[in-house]
Image (cartoon, rainbow over all chains, first blue to last red):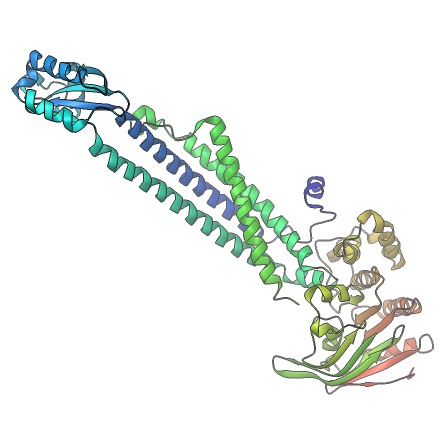
Length: 297
Length: 225
């Protein structure tokens, strides 16, 4: 370890800062907790973003035509609607939903034994769009004229709120991440101050034998940064392991996307969180220790 | 080397040193005496720049420490070796590491000074304790470690605060001889002590001056031993 420190930092002797003391585990624990929370925040933010993207993808490029009233059960009406759609520019494919598919859609509300044939259920036609899709207003006017009561729905009413929800979730995740970063910086600053306070006599002695602020700060910053890295790595690993250990939410149908972005992505995320904890600790410790040292002649 | 002219210093609003005028020539030897609480330690703290005078003039190695930057103060301190009354050894470091500290903080190459440290450790009679921690040493051994640390950087000015206060008379004599030997090498030495037997022991061996501190000011004697 000493050899590695010597290579990286030019450390050439025993640590100036004692390795013991109550403040020693404070930085490690702070970084551990903050990295753990950061992992949760990032995973939640990424999952929300992926979920919103998936919802958007599901609703983009498709539309639905709803045939209401008693005509809905008339095959000729359904055929006529299909013909109108097939001859409309911007529509790639048309397919009426089968009874089974319609039954499946209604199952959550009516159960498996519902007599759909006896209910005035609208007939749904799945429409695959070509490019930007048809002129929705013109198509609706034609449908009103030829098959009254039929509605063309391009899901625009869903896409807007979904986009807003996705943007809101991203903002929420960023806000949470910022809060975690600020909390981490504050905790590292406190830990740095505590470490300094606990080693005031050591600092005074080193100053009196000719130690510069840079030398003393370097010793403390190295210690705090290495602890932050260790805590950050442990916290990130714990967070990722705990999330990885959750039941498969996609299989349960609660969430349509996996929480973790694959093995490689997960490893990168863990590394970045540990690195982030280290950088936050490095910058915070640098500032707080330099300021504190100025109070000691 | 050191010139204080009408220097004053207050601590928490209470005057400790006032109108203090003293000159320490290069290569001189001084005993700083006075009753307990007279301000001997405070005077030494002025010299090693832990305190700075509130007023008056202060010249150290030709510089004015009052107007010095933090880095300049650090560089001035590297020319001063201090034997603190409470030793101020770093408890987590060995004897050799404590002694090497001034060289290490000055950025010297450890390979370059390892032999010097080992030689100095033996010179102060701690060859057997090189890897011992301070808590494993007696008061006298700590004192000698502190002295070795004070001189390892070959400072121009050596300040010793009650260097024999924690040791038996025999060890006190050895420490005094060590300081006299360093003075013989051209170092300016100031020994704060209220131990008159130490001053008497130096009689005839070194041309020391006595600086008497009373009422917050110094009367500088010459050739009084």
